[in-house]
Length: 303
Ligand SMILES: Cc1cc2nc3c(=O)[nH]c(=O)nc-3n(C[C@H](O)[C@H](O)[C@H](O)COP(=O)(O)OP(=O)(O)OC[C@H]3O[C@@H](n4cnc5c(N)ncnc54)[C@H](O)[C@@H]3O)c2cc1C
Image (cartoon, rainbow, N blue to C red):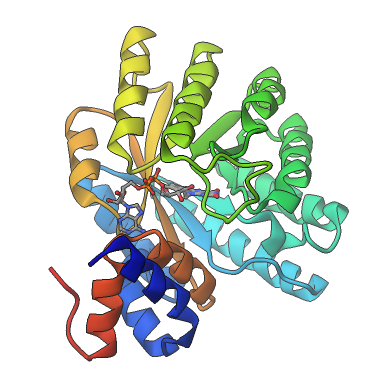
């Protein structure tokens, strides 16, 4: 399949029936229920991997929806703790109200962080699209002042990120470094793959050199290789960083990092609101055309 054809299929994805998208996307999502998610966490633990649980849903518009999301996170945290699993939670700030009112998001997150802290658990704020970059960083810094076990994500494609990292380093923040998944204007985001990889490496180097804990979230061998070289140069023990990967993406790379003794955490999304997350994943999968067509034709997943 040519890249042009892949792009054509991606453009027509909204026309593909949701049932087909769901079938192809099921590898990226643990299921609809908390039990589904906990089974996935157990399976990952058997492989030697840790997990971070994400309840699907984003950009909600009503306060009651944010309260429902907060309640679900509290139940997830209690379940992880009561079952003694090596997992934490990842929260999308707009799912708890950042697009409605930053104060609402702060209240909801503070409750989530307080419950997590009671169990000695870490909470990560995901980073969403650029209108929420600054509000998310502020939210993370406000939470960090009260709850030590809070971290945030930074996106290597954003030109501002290297500078933003200064504030996070000053706060001693645990930062997840990823490339970034949203479509951003060229004025604020690098577009070239090489530039994004360089930016990713610069963020990892700066954060680890400052003595801060980094979560290196990528499936790109070039980014992994650069991070490994930095870890080696700085002589960091495996308690100073972790690799992170998405559920359903590149189990071979996952295995090789675990076998080499690195800590690795898998991002495990679950819940009924799977469509937006799944289509973002499908759009970055180079074999999407083949898979969507197979599902649309009623064929099983490609090997
Ligand atoms: C744990 C984790 C948390 C994340 N959190 C955020 C966040 O908070 N905010 C944000 O904007 N982004 C987040 N991302 C997404 C990230 O920004 C990238 O979009 C995504 O990880 C793909 O980038 P990559 O570094 O893997 O490089 P890519 O160059 O996209 O991928 C490298 C290789 O990985 C494989 N691959 C990548 N994606 C897929 C896929 N979907 N299906 C099959 N194969 C694939 C392909 O073989 C590809 O060649 C997160 C990613 C991870 C791993």
